[in-house]
Image 1: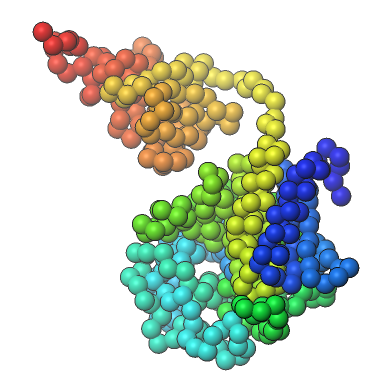
Image 2: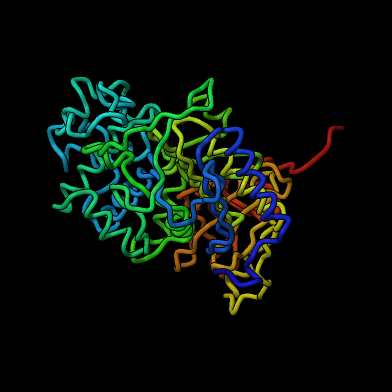
Length: 461
């Protein structure tokens, strides 16, 4: 339950209901359920169904397909954080003999390991997993279709390998490790490998007639880490909060942020679409809003989890049809409706509790050559460097605790920023990865690129 202060306005709730009603009707899906999270709390749930007098609630399971991959990625990042592996390790180091061991752990997470999109026939999503009992059955005779690391090529077998990696390191089944290390700590008690009542049945809707065909709910076996899970809007709402904030019991906030950073090469079409892929998370620039999350589909089901970290709004959309509404678009619309109708109210401004004089004196205007920049302190004891023209490189910097800062984004990510002082202790210039920033354009007293021409600044006579 939410308090009145946390509830959405009636007009917002009606807009959300209208959006899923249109999706259920136009998408011709037997049922569609959705939830919205704001400020780390569920604030809305809605359902539309073709069954008279019944609407599935936030406790009804639907199959979530490839959203499962995000759960698998969390397990792998946990192993990295514990020191059991490095993301740069080739798979062969931990899981030898697969034929795909050249690909690194990070490349498998980002679908850039060169593997095929699917396992060999018959279609793995609609046949029993017992037909593919070994990794060799999943990978086939030619696992690699592309040079490793060169392109993003979505691969379900790649996540089968990651699940096998988890099993090898942990010495337990993927599902058991997931339950103990993620589902139980986060309280996702209605997320499971097999359906648990109450759950929706999966249906195929005829493309040219309003009739349906029951879809089988196969156990995917080895392919489970790529798409096995069933879940609810309530559980996925909680998972969305975790993917926004992190949880030290499962994965710290820094590692969750890492999942949300593009990690795969993008092609021209991806740039045009505004899409990328991180470590187990899809990234999309949609109608001016940066969204992260994942979609999923298996015969009989469609699923989507969409998060706008900046707006602190997330949406979950689940439907029980093989093809129907574009659930990624519905999820993006639900986030947009809330973010635009009820914009996030920022916390009150508060002054810093303290600041060192040696840091404060670095703030203000600096020049790199003739380009003007401003250096500002940030509330987390870091600094930001921004172009005053609004065009050019910018970055935030994390304090290293020794009077230096490390870049967090853009061109200066990982680069060291430090103040260079004269013998008398006054600041000469800033050094940023060998770039010299001075208080005046091409300051004569600074190193290269200081004032080199002895005639100085002049016009044309």
